[in-house]
Length: 326
Image 1: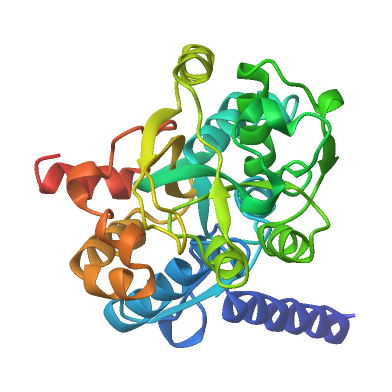
Image 2: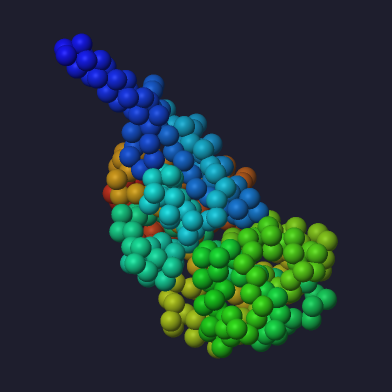
């Protein structure tokens, strides 16, 4: 009997060592050799999150002792919240509106509230760009009626943006032929002429739209003042934005649009010291972020790191911002 008990204890000890060695998302458990595993959930490869996530992984690996950070392509905001909640990601890119919906259990997170989500920092405006090809003759939102329109992947942040903007303009999904497509899928479908327009929520210039503009003359559909006012009155996360002329090849005029704010989030259980180091080193290595995405990288500054923060800050992030007087 004693021999059996000793054998059982040895098995349990080995299992415990194995679990500790593997680390774990959302727990801050270190792997062997003091490694800190940081799994970063980004977005599609054609968006802005993906290259910035790769830059963050490089920054943290170089500047945080023992860091083992990796970035993975995902379905972006909504999918990322679920990955964080399920312990399959440690740091996520997410729109501030989607983070709020998760924290409060509203919109696509109705009855699925996630109160443990915490903010690291807000990053840059994510502009809702409504792109078409010039040969379609689409000049305004009203022209989308009856057309094949890509609104983003089903249940994604982009899809929520598309639905809310159309609603503000008095258009429902019943008025269009809805296509649930990712950024890259929408780009390919526009190039092939299989859809008429697409909603893309990302920092501009966006790779997916730049790709379309290399083969076709594109047009960005502007929003009128009334639609913007109606939208912001109901959804205050949005703000008016101007996409400057020549952001994309063939775009010769400024285009009025709206934006939400991108941000980074973690679990409330993530270690305070590690979060502090992550935020600090991110801001201290801005050149790497700019190299990954020039326009968006330039906007990631500590001075605006708490602007439009829609959920509670993680204590580690709060420590950093207090330290610099923000």
